[in-house]
Length: 243
Image (tube, rainbow, N blue to C red; front, side, top):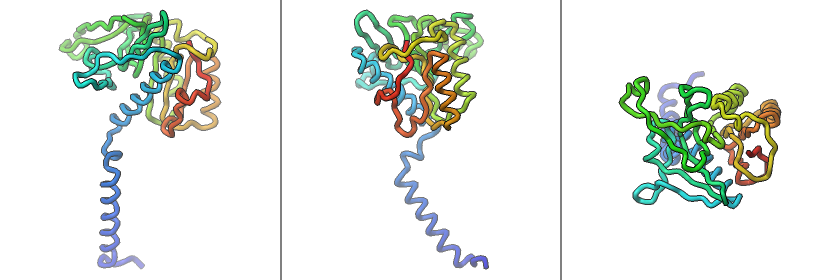
């Protein structure tokens, strides 16, 4: 028999009370939008890359800090790189920069341009601002660097991976037209991390087989399950493709 409205009201009131208490206790977690969560995930990947270079003996320096000394992360392709921070890494004659959201112009054609989440550039690479009437109606400049100056291209996806995502990452690398991103290579213990796709969600056993096959045939890394704290770069338990 269905409960009467009189008997149901106290139950609903109790549920409402519990929901409000739960929301109040966990407000910070639930207040984050998907865009913010993706930004935090990207920052986590950025820091993991910095730690990887540091462990290899690179001297790591933060550049272009804010007036109060804080590091300004760029997690949107619409930002002006001059207004955000970046990291330089040097060891001997090797000097490079780790930057976020830098548009790359393909070696194949200048109109083939896209913005990876993170890119390792040769130090001193010029990021040129050009006004294009087909971009923001010519009101804002488009910042871009040549793909030929990129040592590695990294993408961060705070979601559950799937085959089409993995394959599209290979397409992005091929679109740079830069041979270093598509030639097969060995897996040395040190060196620049090969272009990597960081994925937050877990992968199925079938997907893991696909990822292993891709890493054997292409000089890339596809790392999944990072939402569970599986930061394989910092743990150093899994061999990674490097260039």
